[in-house]
Amino acid sequence: MRAQAIDLFRATFGSDPTHAASAPGRVNLIGEHIDYNGGPVMPFAIAARTVAMVAPASNGWLELVSAQGNGLARVRWDGAVPPGWAGFAVGVARELLRAGVAFDGARVAVASDVPIGAGLSSSAALSVALARALALQAGAELDAATLIGVAHRAEVDHVGVRCGIMDQSIAVRARADHAMLLECATGAVRFVPLRARLLLVDTGARHELASSAYNTRRAECDAALATLREARAEIGALAEWPVESLRTITRLLPQPLRARAKHVVTETARTRQGADLLSKGRLRELGRLLFASHESCRRDYACSAPELDLIVRVAQRAGAWGARMTGAGWGGNVLVLVGPPTGMARREAVVRRRIASAFGRRYGREPAITLVAAGGGARPERVA
Ligand code: GLA
Image (cartoon, rainbow, N blue to C red; front, side, top):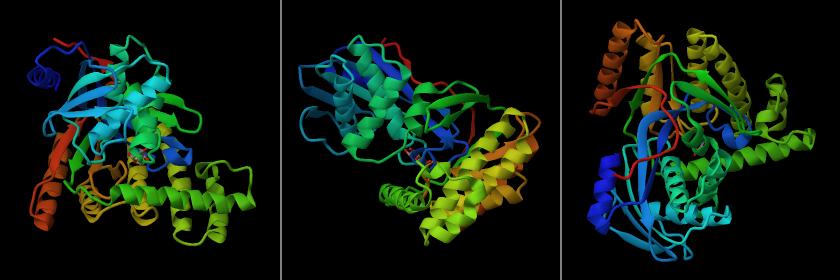
């Protein structure tokens, strides 16, 4: 990706970039739709990354080119937020300025192998890589919290996606070979070694309605919280509701708010328990939580898709220890826990074969299946 981004920069601007940075995509092990409800999530970074090459440009201008886009875009960062990925660049530039970074203008070339719209957080990989590269260009060393905040506000306040903090946090802070338990209410982080044989299965399904459905779920969670707070004013976030008091939720909330709140409360408990199980190497029990998490996403949060459900079902029948959709849902990828890290070659082959053939029979195409490991977070890149 780095070489591709450099070539693109030179071919487009006829000069060399001065600074560069990259940031990874991510998989969420467990804790889906919990970040914006103030609970725990447990993502890890994948090998796929977005690389941003930058150099100064005249004041007020962003000159943008992407290996996946078509041609050069010139936009002013103090003007209206443009559609597409240029909007992320404008958001990042404005938030850097707000954070006190002396930024004038930039030429930017971007290359990425994080698939877009696949639930692997291509947008946070982009905004974090941009923020890091542009900060380097301005000679500023941002701490992790500031970088996360800049990238997050770029999306929420400028692009207009009401996402939580999970994706930007893992893109900045990820540690190789570890999953990161992040308590979104406090920002507390615990790294847990990720010793497991994991597959990522891409359904290829990219649902257009995903962002509107996402915002609908957020609104439903807000409404559920508002009603529950009439009974218990001290509860500040939906994920704070104790799992022992699920019956109160049933009594107080109408559908579909009841189902949404039930997912949040049970998923919160599963995520903390999952982190414990992973740290003790109890992968079979962790796997059961992954299946339960998927079922909760499917039935209660209604954020799954038939393609995802099929893969989870087949993986389970083929002997995988766990499987669930990962990311916002309504399409995208399934994470499959085959078993422990070694000695799993035969089971892995069976799981792969059964998924490929069942999916092929139903949808007439093969899903991409890859082995995944936890990679590192955002970092500076060489420019030559
Ligand atoms: C998207 C959002 C995250 C998170 C997940 C669902 O990836 O960007 O903030 O809410 O969906 O867990």
